[in-house]
Length: 84
Image 1: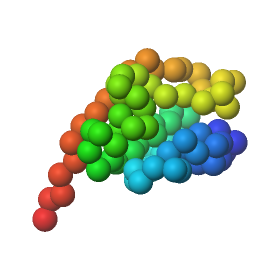
Image 2: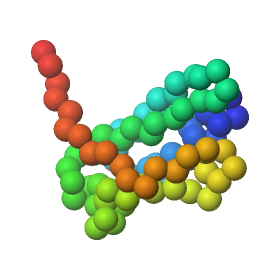
Image 3: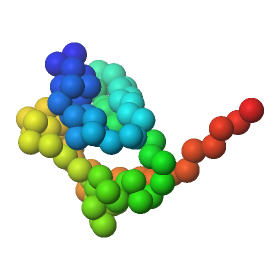
């Protein structure tokens, strides 16, 4: 639970000053938990304002060291559609 609390408080703090919708997904495994930080942005310009021109490069925080076991180099950008 400490890792989840950290992700919810400190780990998503960089997004707090943005208008992005933020979610953290967690999958419990036998010996660890996997976390995905999910954000929804207005447009790619908003993503670049947060992440920089290399907006596919993952953004990490000093607090992630010692808690996260893996550090993905790249992020995945997808489109979201509302189904009615």
